[in-house]
Length: 160
Image (cartoon, rainbow, N blue to C red; front, side):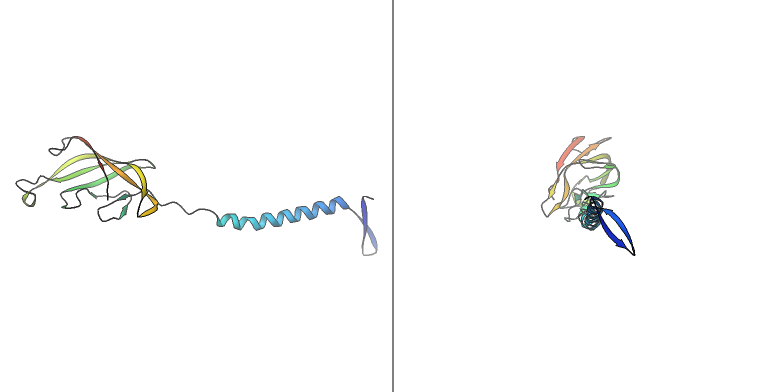
């Protein structure tokens, strides 16, 4: 028989068996779905750390206004950096390279300004913080003259 009888008050009610099974199955699925929502929300990964350039003091920087190139003596510094992009593979800025001419010697020298386009590239995991990626190469393209004897287009490895 497809139907079963149940009493509701004094009057019999006919309920189909497959209707009861379907309702029970739908309730169980709804309960599972409700329980799964908080679990999946807890699995959302945290936002990744941004791509950085590491400075002379082993500190991560994002879009720095200044960047010291000569860590030992401070005789070469990028200043007034205006970042046009900071992407997953490269970062590009324009600014000024302030270079000590060291004439007649560095302590008596004068800082000269050279307009420059700066490109950071070749991101790699930072050994001190494996979850952070850092740029490992810097390219300086002098838009006017370059400091003697530096070429007008030069690329350096960032080792710090």
